[in-house]
Image (tube, rainbow, N blue to C red; front, side, top):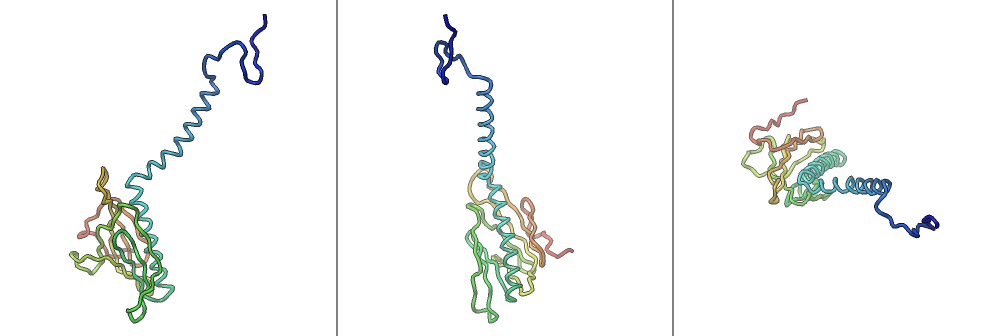
Length: 184
């Protein structure tokens, strides 16, 4: 009598009873790779990712508007409205405007409040003005998640100093007590 043999992977007389250790390890490695790719994507659905993206876009817009004002030697403005930002250069006569860029904030993220030094706290300011030398009045910009959901109370606060890059702080900072003076 002959022992069972295999020809090109086809078993002749004995049926396989289970998986080999190698097959199990291979499946586990593949599942680990797929999970490592999927988990960061799920994290992006968190509102925190949207807030951080919005903060990065606002910081970039502040930098871009300040730089454009200095390069063009004209007053530039960064305007916030309806979940979007517009950057414009103003003509010397103050009448004409040139759109130099625009960007949308992530879905569900809105500018909650803006406070500019020297303005009344009750005034609804939606514009940051950059002078031809790149200077602006110190400002505080609060952004938050406005969609309904488990994390709707999250917010970030951006401090925009007169001459340097904006900084981001976690949570809401009271606009009445926010220190807007420039400290080197």
